Image (cartoon, rainbow, N blue to C red; front, top):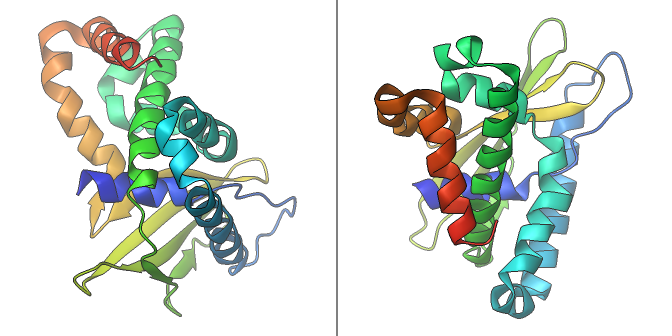
Amino acid sequence: MKRFFLMAAAMLVALVTGANVIALEAPLDIVRQTTDQVVARVQGDKDALRNDPAKMYSLVSEMIFPHFDFNVMSQFVLGPEWKSAQASKRTQFVAQFRKLLVRTYATALLEYSDQKIEYPAQGTGADNNGKTATVRQDVTQPDSKILPIVYRLHSKTGDWKVFDVSVDGVSLVKTYRSSFTSVLKQGGIDKLIADLTTKNQEIGQ
């Protein structure tokens, strides 16, 4: 399940519009177009990317993550710890959490093997004030099972940014929140930052 989370997130790039009132179909159109671009890039350069992980890390960092709202994601992941943490600790956590996801997303992208991707007719929705939206992808797996992927986005300043991804009904941010809970209970945010820093240093991030 974890690798599907990461494959889904890695497909999504550049959710940008300058309009104050967002058309319902705009996020869907952009997700479809940019998914095609990322998949084409990975398939075309797969051997080179596989042989040089740094190139894949750069692809994820430069093409994808500028369009994720890591502050909001981190706030959801840390829960009450976010409110009580000092600003400097929040900044450190966001940086290490981002590095962790670079590695895991890069690994997942290399596992993509030309699965069929479709967009259900009712796969996009928005709230009443046009500030949030969802986009759904259906990915057909090798065993013909349909894997539903739902992106949650918001637009605070006119740019669409991802703040969560759900795969088969399971939320990415909730999954990480659950996995970090025991560490936070043991040593708070300082221990979590230290653990993430160690992991990232081990793989050169």
